[in-house]
Image (cartoon, rainbow, N blue to C red; front, side, top):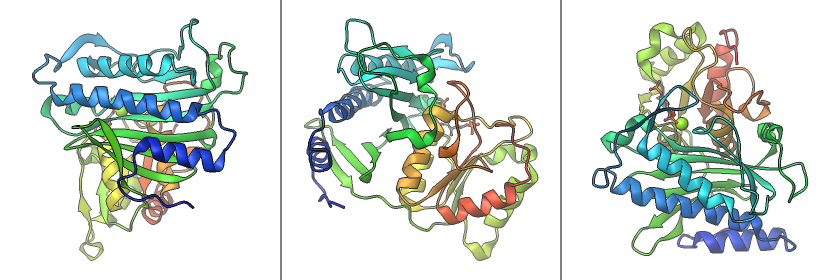
Length: 336
Ligand code: AHM
Ligand code: MG
């Protein structure tokens, strides 16, 4: 596989990988990634001055998930949809903030890709300046380009993902992109508005950190409880970290190893996280980086969504720890 050195721009990476592998490519995939990267720059700029720009707090609305919509959730959702709709690459956007898939308006070309999106993950962390992010998955439509895509086309197996990634708005802004060429991290240099390759060919290292919300311990199922007990054995030199933004907890797991768990429990037998736009994209990245992701029984990417906002238990990270957790959870109730 072609190696890229640090300092390569996102545009150069996209153009060179696509040109080498697909000389006949239309450039639509590159344009799509550039649109996502642009939305990321706009959201990053807004997140950085959120406290100044009157962008903190809620809009007063409740979304399809029954959660209070933050002003930045709303801004991020609109920014992505606007950035994606006119490029001729996208036909449908499946967003956490939208009850139904959003089709590109009829004046624009209905392109070949379906985008699934958590526009701003970790909303509960917005007001305290902790790391948040945007998660995206990219599927290919089945119907011909130019026609209107049906809503059902958004319901594909995780194995059909073409690419996936996330933007992280933390101390710096990072775009992590997973494709058939592996997982690459690009850092935004805000002084010139360009993304540069900073984390080439990411592979999940061995690690001993577990990441889960331990406040829910009393409602855990026995397998989950047994796994976390094992992680606390001093002989394993375990460690706990939990930010409460999936994207940030996953990013740390990707770079440092370990495992993140949001399991089914007695209150949420289907878990909390959403399959199409949270679990699928991160599971794709985990597998591309040599790790694994399951719902406690089945690899996440083998699942077939029944509806757009399906929830799923998620165990994701280094393959050894994911396998160990899955073995213990085999008999835990799981309605997903
Ligand atoms: P959201 O902010 O897109 O609604 O995502 C849900 C968040 C995840 O980022 C995070 O992993 C999880 O909810 C935290 O949940 P909890 O507060 O129950 O630990
Ligand atoms: Mg989320």
